Amino acid sequence: MDRLAQHIEALVFASDQPITRKEIKSVLEETFKQKFKKQELETALLGAKEKFQTDNFAIELVEIAGGFQFLSKPAFHNSIGTYLKQTTKKRLSTAALETLSIIAYKQPCTKAELERIRGVNCDYSVEKLLEKDLVEILGRRDGPGRPLEYGTSQKFMDYFGLKSLEEMPKLKEFGSPDNTVGEAAPVEESLPQEAEASNGWGEVSRDAVHTAISISTIFN
Image (cartoon, rainbow, N blue to C red; front, side, top):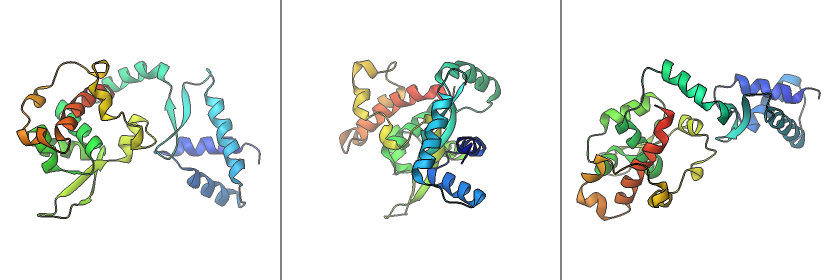
């Protein structure tokens, strides 16, 4: 079919989240009342990706979070960052960024676990992260009180351009001098003894703070 790649481009552009191969195939088959072979769609997708890789476009077609989405190219991130600073009224606080980092690496986790690591109440930070759709409630944990469990959302994946959580930097990567950003945050100095003692809680808390510093540029 002629112009198949352009129909796919239109679908990706119209979608407010990454659109999957399955969704693309379903829409096109219903629209044109015909079946499309897998290779036919893959060829069209490849053609669209190659088209936007040229210097004529400021955006590119990227495969992230299990689907396809248009993203701006790195060369234009400074301009976009300036625009976001000028138009965004509400930004995440350092506390919220630290909480987000811990959730990302420790998920699924409860609020009590977050507070053990950070050493402070996390109600407000969790509330803000839920409001911004960066984290979501995954369910309830079995046990006393059946506390809520939190994890990162699809929007989190989109923000950081991740296909899966496996693409996140490994915690051990933050332990080397080359990957240390700034000095130790105050939260590290006031961690409870039990948080440092077992099950990697101390490692998670220290590295999560450094991770928060490195990812905070997206929200600042």
